[in-house]
Image 1 (cartoon, rainbow, N blue to C red):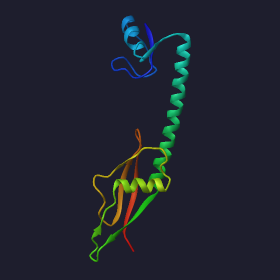
Image 2 (cartoon, rainbow, N blue to C red):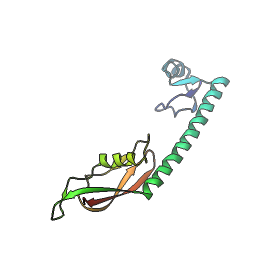
Image 3 (cartoon, rainbow, N blue to C red):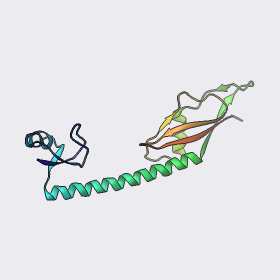
Image 4 (tube, rainbow, N blue to C red):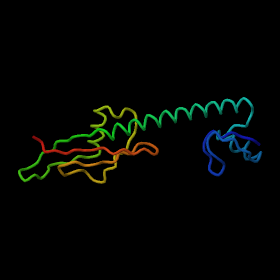
Length: 149
């Protein structure tokens, strides 16, 4: 039986692939659970059109993520922390503070990102922080920590 997978199925294939499976497995499991559709000229056209649309949206999404990564790479964030007379810092710059500042600067709208900061920044100076975007994009954000005037 020829089927078109509607989602990834372990051991069978990926979403929108056309596969040949045993009749019973296809009819009684894959089609019954909504994981696949039997191949007809009509379903084949519908699924291929949907696959093309998803690939186009995926390409646009990757382009937008690439632009966001370039934007993050070319900008920096500056934070001012209180210090004592010896230069010791009170407080720290956390992941949440960095994300909030990125949203305030409107670098992020709906994109979900992960700020890869192993521990809060507690030192004055320039720091480089990795910002992981979805898929294969990672940007380097320059974070500048200065004493509060």
